[in-house]
Amino acid sequence: MNGTRATYPPPCDDSTVTRIAIDADQNGLEMKRLLIEAMRAWGFECVDLDYLGRHPESDYPDVAHHLAGAIQRNEFDRGILICGTGLGMAMCANKVRGVYAGTCHDVYSAERLSKSNNAQVLTLGALVVGAESAKMIVRAWLRSDYQGGPSARKVDRMRQLESESFAGGSLAAVPPPTAGRVARARVGPARPSS
Image (cartoon, rainbow, N blue to C red; front, side):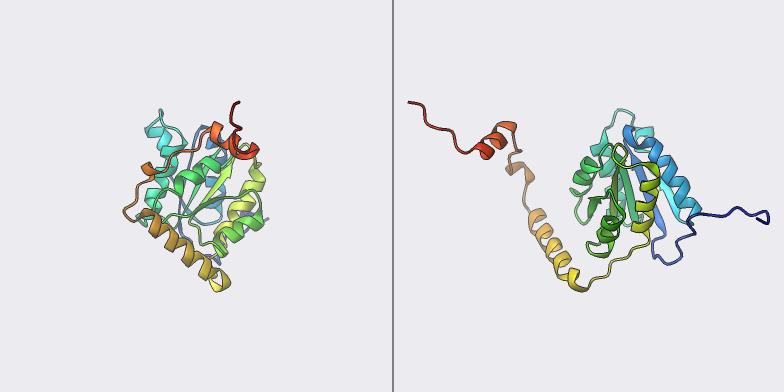
């Protein structure tokens, strides 16, 4: 090589994504570091929000809510959240109106997250996905843009349902599931005592 370092994979020239926010809880800090390095090598502007660095007592709900808020305010094109499984981060990010997040453990799902579902936030599980797989997943997601087409009607319906759910309603009126209620639902109703 003539003094230049090859970049593999090559930069993502075909994407409209430019600014990416990234953050993680304690389980995802090392993966976050590796992904920042990779995305910058691919030519993306990647900003580490480092919520835990400023609020060390916080857990993943606050980390996810902070990044999702930045997406909602259009400060970034997309966001990446990393925790142990990616699931809790996705649940919390999806609580912010207008923000759509999904957990992906494979390349195909990551592409569909963007192409079919128009999600702005990808969540990853550092205890589930290895570093090289995570890079491939992130790369596929960043290279994918929403295609509309047959999915447009479904995405529009999702936004309509979101609007209805957030319009003047209160989540406080919905009781959280309990282990007892879930267990009874699986085995059927309790029998009356004799």
